[in-house]
Image (cartoon, one colour):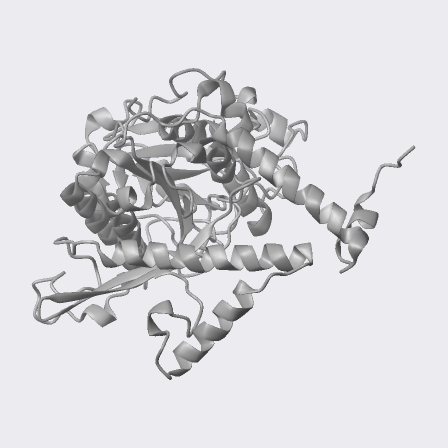
Amino acid sequence: MSQPINRRHFLRQASCAAVGSTAILSTILNLRMAASAAAQDLPAAPGAEDYRALVCLFLSGGQDSFNLLVPTGAEHAAYAATRGGVYEGISNPDGLALAQASLLALPSAAYAPMRLGLHPSTTGMHSLFTRGKLALVANVGTLVERTTKAQYTGSTARLPRGLYSHSDQQQQWQTSVPTDSVMLGWAGRAADLLHAGNDDRRIAMNLSLAGNNIWQSGRTLHPYSVRASASTNNGGVYTHTGGAVALSDYNNTTIGDTSRTATRTAAVNSLLAQQYQNLLDRTFAANFRDSLDSSALYSAALAAEQPLATKFPGETGYSADPAYVPTSDPARTLAAQLKQVVRNAAVRETLGHRRETFFINYGGWDHHDEVIVTQAAMLDIVSRSLASFYAALEELGLAEQVTLFTSSDFGRTLTSNGNGSDHAWGGNHFVLGGAVNGGRVYGTYPDLSLNGPEIVTGRGVAIPSLSVDEYFAELALWFGVPPGRLLEVLPRIGAFFVPGPTGPLGLMQA
């Protein structure tokens, strides 16, 4: 009788370039093909224009989001006291609170329990909120179960694995699994279900502007890395850069000349044209050929795209100020990544895509010091970039079909460590798009008093009132994940919400 194969024995056999490994590799390939076939049995998305895209803007490092969304009414006094007073560079450099008068007030209808406002650097986001295009989600974080202050302080709560660890919490925000270390992201699992609805599957539906990531990694589908966008106007002729990450010095259009690129291209084509006997060699050659063809297809689609009238930070014409220097604008990198998302959405029909996800990582939020000054500059970058991003989507008529949301490692401590804040738990996030029921704050904003019912430890850590599962369920359902299969995408959702046709928060339009 055959014996079960353990992990160590499997890896030892699979690593051998011998006949014995061929059978194992064939099994792996057959399993992947079976999984792919199962996904393709799902019904295709109805209608040629049924396009929807999810954009994850990951603010890695842990954003101090209780300075993004701040009480503006009577509750401001408790907020300021907990945060060590209002920051003032000379008289109170360790204070982390923002002055009440500086906040961008939200309409009173945005959140009934109290008046709230946005950070003064977020004028673009504030405008989108008041237009009903942006919503805020208060005090969300990783949860194994609903947790009270008494359970936390009494050590009876089941807490997320590695609660205050960057690596653990980044993984959990991308997988929506707080109990184990897993490498399948919830966007990857959603793509496994939905990719069959795309008319053309040569280009992956999960596109990353930040390289490999867990969020987009599925059982059968993985991130397709692309580069940020830039467009140059040379006398009315637009040159586009960015897009697919291509093989260096490879270009089929140069075949026949004597350049280095032609020589390298001919050599690569010759290698790929060989008939290999070894299964591993043959599979590698086929995948390499597919990758080159996909890169060419993607680049050709973007090259045919019409230029956008909307200007992004870092582009000539973005500002009417004669002193504006595009190359000196610190927002140009993030803006270029967001523009690449818009460019990709513009050629969705050429690529045959009805569903797409995009991953952008904007890091540097681990503000253990200089939180006030640094965060003000970074939120200005985010706000201005998002204003152009949404304007470009409106220009293309795609605002209702693209939804951007933020994730981050965790929130930060309310108390100051002396000019900065430390790792904490719950935090505030935002969602942008024409399909968002915007102009509202969802969830429960906590009492920021140091002895408040949601605040634990002497450092001021907020216990999340909403789980990431509830937050992501809204987005997954809008994206097209059937309610009956939501557990396949968000394995822990049953602990917080019984899947149905509408989400747990009412955040997204049908």
